[in-house]
Amino acid sequence: MVLEMLDFRWLPAAPKLHLRQKNLVWVSAGMLAAATVGTLGSQTRDSDLTNKLANAALERTHHAVRYDPSYVRIPYPGGDVPANTGVCTDEIIRIYRSIGIDLQREVHDDIVRAPRAYPRAHLPPDTNIDHRRVPNLMIFFQRHGEVLPISPRASDYQPGDVVTWDLGRGVNHIGMVVNQYDTVSRRPVMVHNIGAGPKMEDVLFAWRITGHFRYDGRR
Image 1: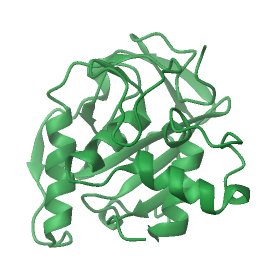
Image 2: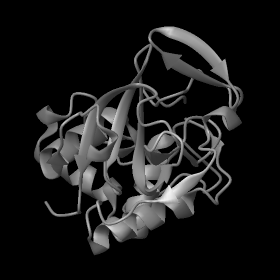
Image 3: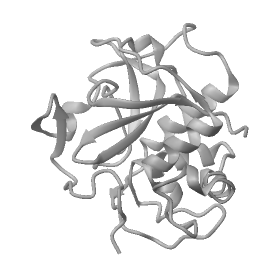
Image 4: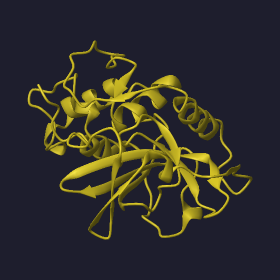
């Protein structure tokens, strides 16, 4: 069974498809990577959670993950697809789970409480897939996190923030801001998986931003 509405299901692992100003541009994975990064300083939020999320996101970049949007039956709670596979949502789920927040359980519980708030969720709710959909994560963060402005200023995006994008063709994407910045563009870099596994890249403004959230695990 093919997983519906998950990001780049129609995209080969490499090269990657980049959408800019409605034009399709093929780029290699290396062209997206930040050439040189520095560490964000005191202008960022100073919190234990921020550091944990940023460090957990950076740790994900050391894992080899094959992009695979297939529907997979997984345990509940604490379930995950095979560690060497996944899509962009799986990286966000793994980042949060590594600091003790299980989005599989949190999203499922919220869908059970308010099914009408989740038009993309299965009815009855499906713990194998509902939390792995970008639209469902966006609704969950809107309901239980902090919804932040979609700003053209890079400095408004802080480590630990979750950003969602519209890549075109009905494809959504999600990533996390980390405590590094590109020394050329001066933008904070993102950890995301758009087809070649979890990478740290300067892609904050590469696509149209549809959501900007902070979530600390509290309901």
